[in-house]
Length: 129
Image (cartoon, rainbow, N blue to C red; front, side, top):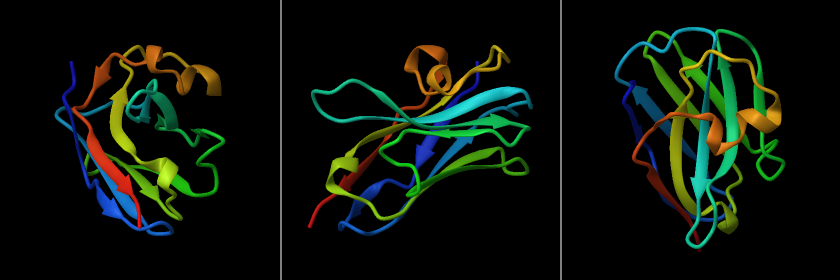
């Protein structure tokens, strides 16, 4: 079981940027999906972005496409989420997740919270003026 620790959350004004980081306790080998999810109060946890480690495949929710970028630094064993042009509706707790099965997923499955079996504790992002 890999341990995931998120950081980089905070408060920012609309239009601002934040970069979230997710450090893994063990090396996450190629051939696995990792993703970022978010959960606002009273709402279900939703997929924001996912990446296939070792490949070039990335998936994004329609609500963040063109504004958020998911990436991975293999040397640092760290997953990132660059968030630009932030909006108040992006306010949520953001979670990093990793799937250990090694299966390949379509966009729908890769952005589903039911796909992942390793989760971080979350980092809060608040966008307000």
